[in-house]
Image 1: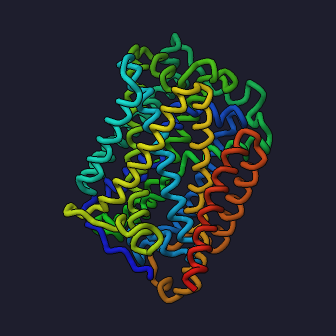
Image 2 (image 1 turned 90 degrees about the horizontal axis):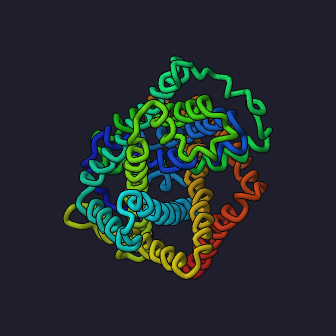
Amino acid sequence: MAKKAPELKRSMTAGQMEMISLGGAIGVGLFMGASSTIKWTGPSVLLAYIFVGVILYIVMRALGEMLYVDPGTGSFADYASEQIAGYLAEWANVFQYIVVGISEVVATTEYLRFWWKGTSDWVAGVIIILFLLVANLASAKAYATLEFWFAMIKVVTIILMILLGFAVILFGFGNGGHPVGFSNLWSHGGFFTGGLKGFFFSMAIIVGSYEGIELIGISAGEVSDPHKAIVKSVKSVLWRILIFYVGAIFVIVTIYPWNKLDSIGSPFVTTFAKVGITAAASVINFVVLTAALSGANSGIYSSSRMLYKLAHEGEAPKTFGHVSKRIVPSHAIIGITSGIFVGFMLNVLAQFLNKSLANVFVIVYSSSVLPGMVAWFVILLAELRFRRKNPHLMENHPFKLPLYPYSNYFALIMLVVIVVFMFINPETQISVAVGAAVLIIAALIYVVKHQKDK
């Protein structure tokens, strides 16, 4: 019989809650993978980020509307209109962040090699995993403090990059006093270089970049004064993320011709080097190292809370429902970290046996994008049901979703369109198929298990 998970300790501040969401959504992809979305659609990638940002704004307002009434741990899954939807949202979250955690640890070992070339990847990976395990076992407050500073480093770097970029564009700083101007936005094949198809292809990757912002819904169960924190976080985090992503990419595609980005390496490194910061490579390497640690840290936090919740609902082994003396779901944290460790060691083994097998990992990582979208679908569908079931709660509700229900339907339709284009795009077909297979297997397990219960 499913039962509601006991509340965890409310030891986070609103500021830490916001930084957790920022940390979850601003990942390594922005620093190292900006050119991958630009190649499909050119400078119009700016509009693609804004478009997905609008969808995400609707998702977050729908979530905020429900969380304001019930700020529980993992509560966006609680609101699912069907039990199987909540089940899939929870297991999708667990799968997504184990895979993301593996990839971030792999990335971290590569960044460490920049300074310590002789370091063994598996030794560095094990040390990193143990560090993250201890940080998460200590307390929610310790985790939040660590994530706060991880996110702060990323945010400061992006702000500096944007400011320096505008100095290059407007005043020619670092370019011999000759302003770069804005002509690169349209001079190399136009603004929409990939047409409508390329525009939607880029959105599949952008959706993956934004995934993690719904961490607000999971951390809501451990934040003090949740009503005030939820309203403040939902309103501010999305705009901050849009500014950071759109601002940084605007600077990149304005300073550099979009069709030459592949040849310059990391645009962040090149931008800092252009204005005379000779240690640019070391600075950015430190930042992306922090970004990778932040991504893994957020993933362990998020998925361990979901696994804890699943255990109390009878959908995962009971041991994962254990709470330590420090009021954290310690067995769930150990379980998630163990999954990351096993995946990391398999990746090391694959690279050792056959260097070409390492490419399989990219497919596995990308396969987390579709499961990551499940939470967004569940939030939007749950909000429609929430409104129908609780009209009395809406009368004096201070944080309603704007333009309901049209905004909700618009977001749902656009998410479906993006998934369709993921199946059309040859470069994402395998990844989305793997993600779909994971969801189908999880659904079949649920159906078989609950058929026996009848």
